[in-house]
Length: 253
Length: 189
Image 1 (spheres, one colour):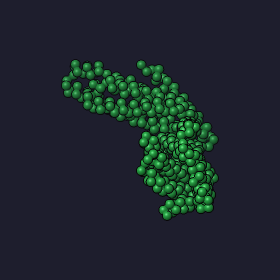
Image 2 (cartoon, rainbow over the protein chains, first blue to last red):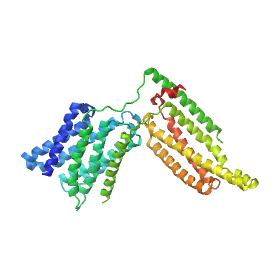
Image 3 (spheres, chains in turn green, red):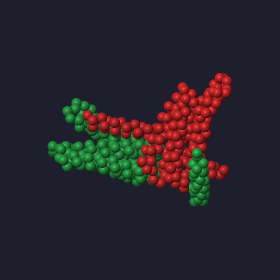
Image 4 (tube, rainbow over the protein chains, first blue to last red):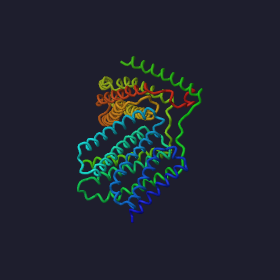
């Protein structure tokens, strides 16, 4: 009964999120995020249909669809990356290198496991690949969050809500998956109950923060003449300061 | 079990940073943009650290203390030591504030930079942390032993401050001045 309530709540929240996204205009602003939400909704619908009408297909379908949604959730990372660093090209370049490095490292680790054939069956292999992908996602998110905090990047309320919900979901999911995959553990019942509740809580955070389209923080803009004047003044000051710096270094005993 | 610990740490860090980000974004005080004036001030602050370093070295030279010890009354000697102690503490706290301001500027300047390098970031952070640690120790030594018994540590603090400033000056070279904020008031005078 409890599982059904959570499932219906989750699906309803997904639908509300999508509808509100279209109505409020956030759909065009964060297309990759809504692509992820759409794919989760499709997965839930497929799961429900197969559970009701073709129960034999439910089990073999579960892990592949779960894996597909985990891969789709990478779209959220890309969305966060695109939106939060679009005014900071320098940091964006650095973040891109860091993210690609972390991604390549963990994918090669997961691929090695798959190639060495350490799995008893296909479902287990897919499940473990999904878990590894979630770990990579966690590592990538950690790098992104660290960059956003360290460089005090200015975020709008919509993007902040999106990041908060996503961090809450991925953070708790990573820990739950680790507990779930521990051999002979007696705690697996806890994450099994915790994950759906976390999921509904995340969807609620997203629903609230993305209910309406809120303006992004204003970036300074100037007129052409002002800009030329600033450029000239800043460059002159920079040259003067640099010259005085060199003079001091020469005079230093 | 190792995996569980590692992933628990990962998950905890994600949640911690997300909370930090929310707190940072929820702050009522908006993040001020870096102005051309602040950029120039940073350069002047760097220059002053280099100039002050030589003066400070002279102030804590043992020769002055030896001269006072030879020719002055004990009361004068005590006043002299106290004054130099106050001076050392004032200089240390002023330099620490200046370094903290430069570090803050560095973080705010991130979006104005052509291409930040991770190696440089690590070097600058390491030098800043070294200076902060050294200055804490020096402050304690000056407080307990007095300025003339802690001269070596004071000189070491001066060197670490100089090291940080040299690295920071390379950072200013890479700033794109066209992206600095147009603070009209600050550009007029």
